[in-house]
Amino acid sequence: MEFGPVPLDEAIGGIAAHSVRLPAGVVKKGTVISRADVALLREAGIASVVIARPGPDDVSEDEAAHRLAQAFAGPGVRVEKPFTGRSNLFAETAGVLVVRRALVDGVNRIDEAITVATLPEWRAVVPGEMIGTVKIITFATPATLLDKALSQAQSGSSPAVSVAPFRPLQVGVVSTLLPGLKPSVVRKTLTVLGERLAPAGATIVADRETPHETRALADAIASLAHGAADLIVVFGASAITDRRDVIPSAVVAAGGRVERFGMPVDPGNLLLLGEVAGKRVLGAPGCARSPKENGFDWVLQRLLAGLPVTGDDIAGMGVGGLLMEIVQRGQPREHGAPDTAGDGPA
Image (cartoon, rainbow, N blue to C red; front, side):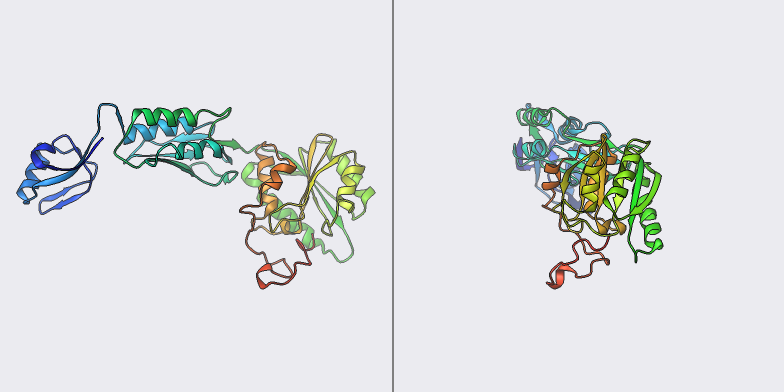
């Protein structure tokens, strides 16, 4: 592609590289300069103009952006018509954004004029939300570079950008009780959980209360796991502090297994992920009683979207996992005090 200042007589058919304001109007950036534009420029006393002129092997910015955006888009993603070298991607459904980082990074490393940006991976999104953008910096790009970018964008075994739709799961809840835990706290917790489930169309279909004891809790978990519940959430009257504590012991006693206890997201450190009879079990950290975002949300949203969550996945959540304080914390981190409360009472 040619780029630079040229005499007006040579500018016709070129693309204006910058907007030029004139007494009689403006020649906007990106305009394909016509004879009429040249006449206006000459009348204003301008002798030359900076233009870009694509070569025979170049692809225009709009076409390149649109083709690359379409190559990135997978299920649940809509591609917008391009403008000024940009084509945006939008969520078609409520769900969790799945981004193959290696494919995005690979395209961005091909050439500085070819750029792709997305929302953070694993973000919960709503229909119509903008989730990504492809921007071609220059007015055109060589076809060879575009072909390389298209190949990279489609090189994975799954789409580079997609939205895993939420599923209307049926959720069973068990709340353990200890003296001093107010019934109002349990009721409020169920309300907050219901609000978390609502965007996915998921509902609470069973609500059990048991003493904070291993055997009683194991029986409640097993009953839900062999019933209609697709997912089980346990809110403990006391936070989990060890794999041998009541909630993880109850998961094992119910015939299940503990996949992971503890996560590098704060608030949310004391989360437990397990499984009983093929049903996922979440031991909620105390911060899950708050409606504010915490590590519990990150795992819950993926499960509601049918995405696999492993112990290794949770171990990889540390970067970006330092979230805002919530009022339930007895000793906020930012004051330098030791966090003896963990996630607070559950």
